[in-house]
Structures are given as structure tokens and as C-alpha cells.
Length: 137
Image (cartoon, rainbow, N blue to C red; front, top):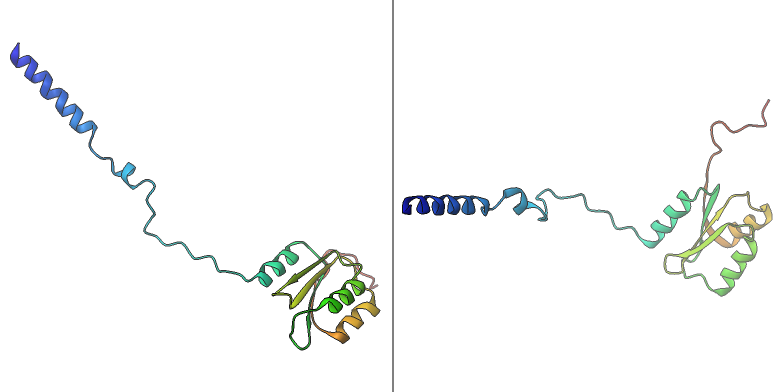
């Protein structure tokens, strides 16, 4: 009977020891992998705003800055607001040195000409879709 108790005790200890051994899969779980992920490039506020304008699907986007490179003042902003009344979105960016305007209609020619005369302007116009009807015969 004593041999049987010892055998049961040994068998129990063997089962207990083997059940409590560390599992490699569990030990590695939750630890950072050794492969390095590509770092996400840090974009400036201007780049983020420009990307937002592009992905919003505007037909034309204008980046407007003062010709002397200084920050846009209240008079500049009022002028731009008045001359871009048909804009769908206006965003001040680049520490107040630029305004990005997104439009879905062509601007009034006199207004855009006045803006080009007074400011440094970068215009981005989306080409019409390939299947768009044309006026040519």
C-alpha cells in the first residue's frame, strides 16, 4: 500500500510539474516583435490640411499667401473672404501664413484675378473625369 501511495504521489508530482512548465507561445505573447515597423512620416499642419482638401474631392484648391511671406492680417482675411464667397471650405494654416480654399464651382473670374494680383497663389485644379461629356464636336 505504501508503494502505491508513493507511485500515486510521484505520478501527481510529474503531472503537476509538466503542467506548470512555461509555454513558449504564451511567454512571447504581448511582447513587442523584433521586426521594426516602418515609421509613419510626420506631416506638417499644412500637409495634413492639403491632404484633407484633396481627399474632400474639391474641383479646385487654392493656396494663398502674402507675397512678402508674412502672416495674413485681418484685412487680408477679409479681402479673401469677400473674394471667395463661393468657396466650400477655407482653412488657415502654416501658422497663419496661408489660407487653403476648396471650391466645387469655378471662381468668379474678377474675384480670382484680384486674388492673384494681391497674393501669391498656388492653384490646383482637378481634371474632369475621363467619361465626362465634352463640348467638342
